[in-house]
Structures are given as structure tokens and as C-alpha cells.
Image 1 (tube, rainbow, N blue to C red):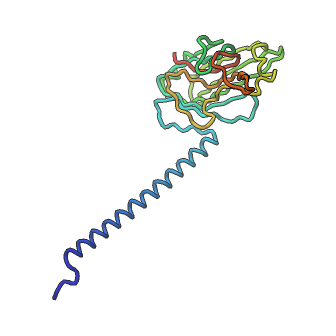
Image 2 (image 1 turned 45 degrees about the horizontal axis):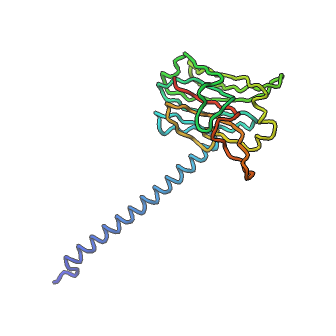
Image 3 (image 1 turned 30 degrees about the vertical axis):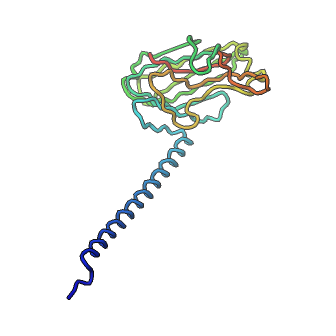
Length: 225
């Protein structure tokens, strides 16, 4: 009695079934990968909105800005990898556009060996006007579960050096707040500019643009020691 399905037909059907199975597997894997990717992206968005620090590259600095809802107050969560020691620096005069000034108005560093381990640091910066009309810009870093701490720093700013904030020029400013759009990854060798504010310059056409030259303003940055 003849075989109802020739050998070649049986082989072709088997191959077709395997091919269909592989295609279904590939489609399923693609769909799952897309869903995982979308879920990861949504999770990162929610973590960023909540100010949660995600560390993907533990050899680099990670920073995210945290909204505090208070004028002239800034806060960051920072991951600082083991082996890096920094000074805190503040300047309030002659602020360049793309890098720190050659000299800080004030600097400080801690001799406590916080650099012997990875650390997550909560950093708060405040700019406040004092009773005499002058201003003070301060930085307060806190490593929550460590006996060894980084030292903060504050700089008194004469009121005439910050008149640009009160005479209308601050309506358009140049600068940065690192991590204000989610976690930012930075080379630990730095320098790491956390905060920069400068007034823009009015152009002949009436627009306001960042000056390529140093201008009044203020900056907070970390410099590796």
C-alpha cells in the first residue's frame, strides 16, 4: 500500500512546523523584551520623579536633583564611588560659561576617610539673604549611615555682587542644575558642577543669550583632591 505522504512532503511539513515554531518564539521573545523595556523605562521615569537614585555604573558619580519646593534651595542625591576624595567649592564672581573659575571664593574638604567605601550623599544648597542685606550660599552634604562625613562650606556674598538677581536681569538666566532631568552620570575625576547661575546678556536684536565670557553669578562644584 503506497505511503499517503511522500518522504519529501513529510520532511517539508516537519521543516515548516519547526520554522513556524521558531517564528512564534521570536515574536514572543520580541514582545516580552518590548514589554520589559517599556516597564523599565516607566520605572525609571517614576524613580526620577520621586528623586530616587539609580546606579548603573558603580565606578562613576551618579546625581539626581530632588525637588524641595522652596525658593533658592537645591537638593541632590549623589552616589560617590569608593576611592574619590573631593573638596567643596563655591564662587560668586567671574563665573565662566562651561567650567569652574580658576579660583574658588571658598573651598573645604574633610579628612574623615569617607572615600574608603561607596557612599550615597544627600546634598542641600541654600542661598539666603542675611539681616545686613548681604547673601550667603551654603552647601551641606550628609552621608546618612556613615561615621565619616564630608564637610560642607558657605560663602558670604556682598549684596552688590548679586544685584543681578534683584534688578531684573535674573528674568533670563544661564546655568545648570545637575540631575534636574533625571539621573546624570559623571566622570568621578570631575570637576562636578552641581549648580551654576548667571544672568544672560541682552543682544542687539533684543534676545538674551549666555555670554561666552565670565560674568556675575554663582557656582557650586566638587573638585577631586
